[in-house]
Amino acid sequence: MDHTGKDPVGEVIARSAPETLAAKAQQDWPRMAVLAVLAGAFIAFGSVISLVAQSGLGEGPATGPVRLLSGVAFSVGLILVMIAGAELFTGNTMMVLPTVTGELPVSRMAGAWMVVWIGNLAGSVLVALLFAASGGLEGGIGDTASSVARDKLGKTAMEIFCSGILANALVCLAVWMSMNANTLPAKILAIVGPIMLFVAAGLEHSVANMSLIPMGWLSGMPGGVDWSAGLLNLLFSTAGNIVGGTLLALALAYGHDALKR
Image 1 (tube, rainbow, N blue to C red):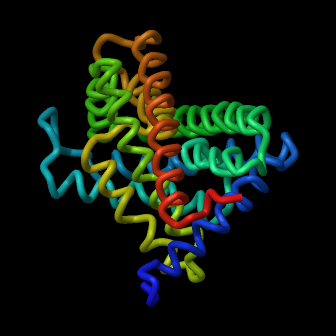
Image 2: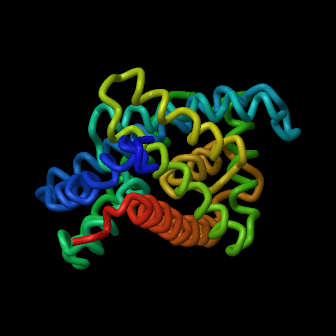
C-alpha cells in the first residue's frame, strides 16, 4: 500500500476494468461467438483433467488432498481461457461495471451474456461428446464422471444458487487478479488458488457444469439422462454466478473508488 493506505495495484486494476470489460462486450457478434465456443471447450478440458485426477477412487467421496489436486488440475481450463484470450460467461458477469459507469448499455451487456453463454454451452458439449466418443469415459474416469454429475443433480435449487454465488466470486477474483499480471507465471499463479478453492469445495460453476453433467450422462450413470435436473442446475448456477460475479466486481471497484464518473 502507498502512504494513503490504498493498494496501488488493486486501484490500477479497478480503474482499467470498466474500459476493458466494455471493449470485450463491444466485439462483433460472430467473433464473440467463436471465442465463446473456444472458452467452453477450454473449460471442458479442465473438467476432463479434473475427472482424471479423481479417477480410480470407486464410489466413495474423494479425500481432501484428491479434491485439492482436482482443483489444481481444473485450473488449467481458466488458464487456457485467460492466456489464449477466449470469452467466458462467468468472467463476463463483471461487465456490470461498465454498465454502472455508463460505458456500456444494458442491452449490449445482456446480448453479450447471451451470446457467450450459448457459445460456452456449445463448446462444452462438443468436447464432452468427443471425449466420450474417444473412449475417455470408460473405466474409472467414467465412474468419477457419473459420481460428480449425480452429486450436482442431487442438489436443491437453493443449494445450487448459493453455491453458484461463491463459485463465481472466486472465478472472477482469479480473472480480476490476472488482468494486471504482466507475465505468464504471474497470470497462472493468480488463477490457480481461487480455482483450486472453488473446485475442492464442490461449488457450482455453470460453464464447468455444461461439460461435467453431460459427461456424467454419457458415462451411463444410473437413472439415465434427467433433462429437468440438468436444466435446473444450469438455471440456478447461472443465476448464482451472475450474483457472485456482480457483487465481487462492484465491491472491488467501489473499494478502489473506480465507480466515480
